[in-house]
Length: 138
Image (cartoon, rainbow, N blue to C red):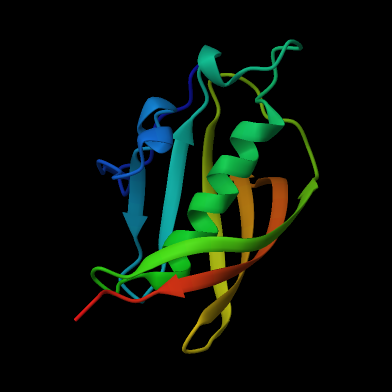
């Protein structure tokens, strides 16, 4: 059974070719400087056991960490320096996965961000990241 995509999530074309090919293309702008990233788990996201591949979960967490490290600063880039992940539960095909991120601290050069990946009310993965802020050229 396939979960419904929440109405708050809208399609967004990523500039990242890796994210495009992996269908990481849904965002929810919370309007307070935070954004959630969503992914509908499909067969292409599965591992050999029919669960969402850990690499897909890490991609989703990385997107949540990076997008929140810079949101909503137009033109600012983000590069992951360090990411620590904890797999808490498995996710299955058809589930809608979303990030819930919090910027703990932002300096001139780095953002320190926490992120949970959720399937409904279930925590699938937790992540923390140090993100290099790449400022737009003048």
